[in-house]
Image (cartoon, rainbow, N blue to C red; front, side, top):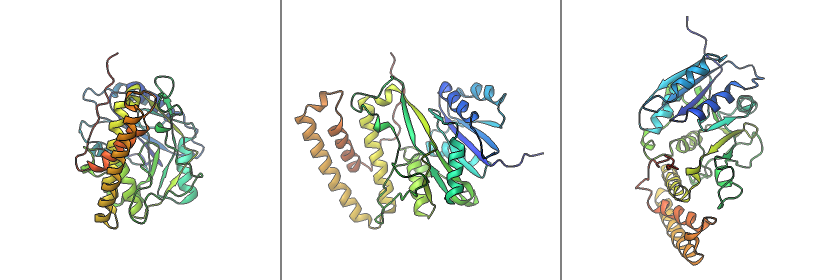
Length: 322
């Protein structure tokens, strides 16, 4: 006999992070659950050797909720994220990444935000803990690695201006969706065309917003991300900044009220950013510094606007051998 559908599905996409997956699952199973929700956990593993299988089996043996393990080797992030959405049986789907851990009231805060506001989607803050023990010298407060929109709890997130320009770049880590409202008739969530270049989750949020779905800020739903050393290295930050700007341009133009004007605006702004960033980086000798990154980041923002038709795609995040 089939089990009744749970209230909430927790989805985790993992790739070769068994320790991170174990930490994420530990935090999921430690939820206060004061709302008395029925839950399930779905883990989609993209590693060829199934690095997460043993972890899931260990936790499933003592979990009060079902944990399902799905192996999917598709090399497309949009397809993989869609698999997690497709496998969800709950009324709501919450997403947490395999490098994140959730506060004990996380699910209560996310679901509570939807119940209190009648919104279709809620997104919460992401804080950072650094594998190296502290933020990098060029960002001593670690602000580049934190997602905090600075909005009041339960405030509605207006993701785009009237011209179509995105205001925020949101990711699915620490988010919740009302499945029936957001994906009627079981339609796919992510656009697979974004899966090779990245930005599929940012595009999803903006597209749903443009379709009239309401998104709120769940300030009390907290997760903490482990920032690995390789992600703080300057070459990585520069490439990632350019790639994220390319995503921004593609998403903007996809819904711009006047695409031709938007293209000109972005080209001019990108050119100015490249020139200003390059000049000031040279004048201040920033290219030799490990504690200053401002002008090099500005240059990458400009390059992203000028090269958006040639997306960077996946970035090799394999840590260098010590």
